[in-house]
Amino acid sequence: MKIGGKAYRTIWLGEDGWSVEVIDQTKLPFSFETVRLSHVEEAADAIRQMTVRGAPLIGATAAYGVALALRADASDPALERALALLGATRPTAVNLRWALARMRERLIELPAAERIAAAYAEAAAICDEDVALCRAIGEHGLGLIRAIAAGKPGKRINILTHCNAGWLATVDWGTALAPIYLAHDEGIPVHVWVDETRPRNQGAALTAYELGGHGVPHTVISDNAGGHLMQHGEVDMVIVGTDRTTATGDVANKIGTYLKALAAHDNGVPFYVALPSPTIDWSLRDGVGEIPIEERSASEVTHLRGLGEDGRPGNFQVTAPGSPAANPAFDVTPARLVTGLVTERGVAPASFEGLRRLFPELAQERAK
Ligand code: MRU
Image (cartoon, rainbow, N blue to C red; front, side):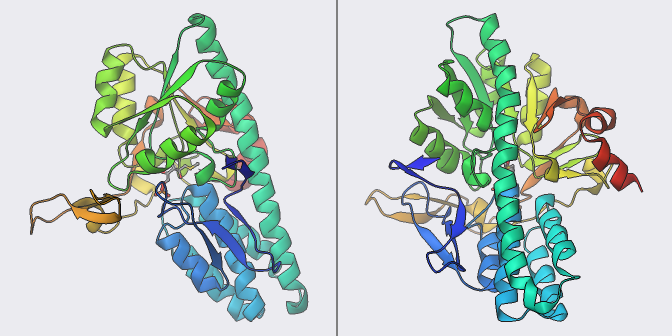
């Protein structure tokens, strides 16, 4: 994707060939800044503090974090320490665990002298694969948008999304936003309702920034507006990303997703979830009971980040002084509310059978 005419991925190697550069997403949309990561601790902090965020990008950053750790010490204990440090940064997105397991499998049998080069190569492969998976998700999701467009020729297609599942959340393209970019590029008149996504406002800050940068018509709405718009026929489809999807098709995503799915169900609006296969947790059957939900700082609820009247970024308290706040960061949408899962291999019903049909080798591997 391009910023100011320059093509960017969200993560890349620095000019020195070994440090890792990322976009500081905590600074968007008000300033575009990049950060250089030189140590595994910096990679872990970047994930924890959400300098980088979004399930696929968290996994990619962790993979490079392992490579940075091995530069300092390529021994077995150092590798295990790095995996543990990075694995403890955020609990819900399963791509983190997936990427670290893949790095371990690739590295553990190698002599220490070969590990650094292999770690960089594997991290780069994870990134390249993510770009290809997201592009394929885009193609399959585009088919859904084309079908809606065929039913209302020449009319605006209104798509609602929650949080940010665009190129900023992945290495490039995005998951939920990839079909939207492709539809826009081929001239389908798409318009996106962007949920602001309190408390951290990934929709208002990141999704709006991305869509605006690409020229996709969009409107930011308060999180509470979606149901009203659906009741009035203003939403043709909902598409969101996911941080972890169970083998049975239950979907964990940013807090508030479940309420959108309920409203969509009540109003007969199709509710799609876009995901690459590394986001499927084949070991889980019951999303509500089994997916760990990250509890983040109450300060994200009590305070809002924004530009003050003086045009400077700042944190502004919005709650009554002294009121306690709770901040569960994700919720689970049961499979019965999901119209379809848009994957790199096609659109599947949100069920074990649906996923198994598309990914028989993965379903079998995990069933062992
Ligand atoms: O807390 P975040 O910003 O990391 O949460 C991100 C989301 O919930 C995304 O929708 C999800 O990771 C899918 S990204 C393709």
